[in-house]
Length: 428
Image 1 (spheres, rainbow, N blue to C red):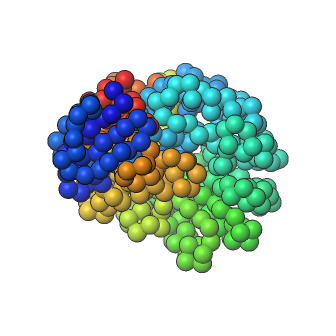
Image 2: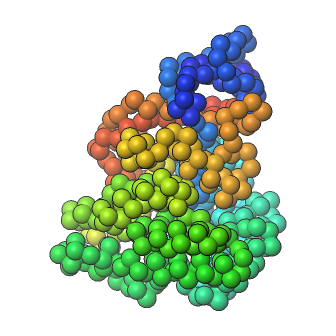
């Protein structure tokens, strides 16, 4: 059927309404809409949101298909309520040419569980020495607008300045992995009381904060856009807040795990908690939540980082950094932000759909739930609460820090341009 009637949904958490989808667009929103000729989905008071947009996803293809593929990654995205993801450039080969970003873009179009927007590398091979083909990647079929060496910092100030100058011509954005490499040599976890007690190399907050401070000043000097990946410290929040008060064109993201987990978990020595940037203190977590609530931090981004079993099930020092996050992101945000009263569901739609779509220029995503808009929608059972079971993940990897932990909320339906990709919690 080309028509779908979603009946009795709480649009953005408001009063129950009906939403009629006709083909790829929303035809009407209201009460008592006719069901004639339409497939009816009884929402029963579930919350209807625009499809989520993730500005920071690692799909691993090409090169590390043992961790994830575009197919498995987009299936995980649809399961978590995402209708668009931005795929990071640290693949093998690196996405630093028009050819590689077009490959990722075409794989996304072929598999279709969500839209895939490739992110191009800032420097050739992520080596920080020479600018990659930024213009060619932008002019390619993939139409790249976001560039990042994520996994590595663009540590050279001259290279960073040149990148900001280059992308300004087409209103692109450089997404910085803020990590001063000299300050984090041998680092294994957040530098603080816990690292001292465990005898693990400390990762100081200033390693992140110093790069952010430098880059917002560079962005101001150039008049270009800079985006801060996975911001993790209270000090970083204050720098971004100051920069925004000056009118500097900076945006920032926080991951779900940095909104919930702290470095106290590292006492278990379980490598599932090893991540870049590291889990920080309770004080940092509270500052991040408040900053997301007041808009200092613009968006939530998953930093979905899948790894095969052998890369995580080993001693702490040898383990890879990263966590999967697409399938649990909305639940963690409900736990930390909605159920605590810091955000309502309209705020969640803003931080996880509208704003990331705007930053990445993801046309057709992050739009209001209203007539004439693309039918990129999700239905969320916010009353659900249950344990996380990675055995049921659509992702190829299972490195979640939430195994067995009870979290609220469950995405039951996802529609990509009116086509159901998830129905009653099952992928189509």
